[in-house]
Image (tube, rainbow, N blue to C red; front, side, top):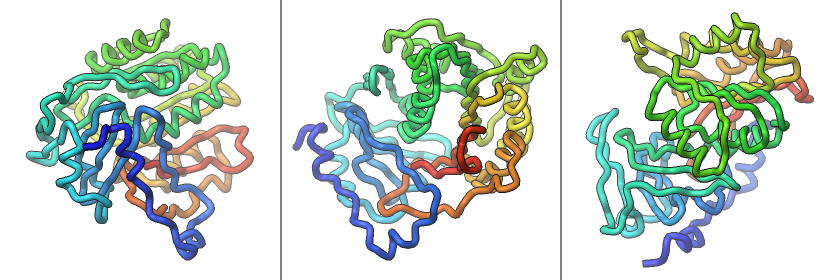
Length: 317
C-alpha cells in the first residue's frame, strides 16, 4: 500500500475538451486549491476521498455526482476512516486501519488546525473555504477590525489574526469556541476576542452601539433551532443579515458571505449584495461546471466597493 503522501501522485483530473472550455462563462466556478496538508484525492458516487496530513477519510458528499476514478474497494484500502450514514442527519465513523487516530492536526501556511471525528461527518475544518481564506489574507491590513459571525472552529479568524487584524469571533456553541481557541494556541496566536452568543443578535447590538468593522465574514447555517426553539431558515434571514452587514461595514470594507444551503443560490446572494453595495448591475453571471467532480459546493459572494466590477458570486467546490 502506498503511503498517503504519495497517493495524490496518482490522482489526475480529466482533461477538459475544447468544447467544455468554450462553454465556460465569464464567472466563476472555482475550486479551492490543495495545499501540503490537504487534498481531495477522488470523488464520485456520493462520496469523497480526502487526505488530511497523513490521515485519509471517506465521507458522504451530495455534490460528488458521477463515477469516481478509483473503485471504492481501493479507497477503503487507503483510508483510515469512513463515515457511514445511518440517516440523512446521523451516522458513525468506521475504522478501516488499526492505526487510525481519532484526533490529529494539520498545517495551513503558518497556522495549525486541530481535527477530530464528529458525529456529523465533519472533522473541524471545511477545506473548500480555502478560497475565502486566501481572499481574507490578501485584503486584511494590520490593525483592521474583522468580525467573524457563525465562526465555527475559527479558520477565517486565524487567517485574519495572522495578518495582524483585531478579530471578533462569534459563535453560539461553546464547544466550537473552545475548539477555535485551541486552534489559536496551536497556531501561536493570541488576543482573538471570543463571543459566545447568537451571531445575528450580537451583530444587531453592535449596530446599535455604533461599532464598525473593516471586514465581515459570515457563514450562516442553512437551518437550525435557536436556544429557545425558534426556527432558523437562511432564506428567511438573508435580507436581515445583509442589512445588518451594511450597517456594520466601514466605508471601503469588505464582506465574505457564503452558504451551503441548497435553497439559497446566486440570485439570492446577488440581491443581498445589492442591499450592501447598491449597484444597478449587481447580478451574478452564469455559473458553469468545471470538469471533474464537484464536492462540498458552497455559494459565496465577495463584496467590496473597490472592485472594478459588480460584486461577484462564485461557486466554490
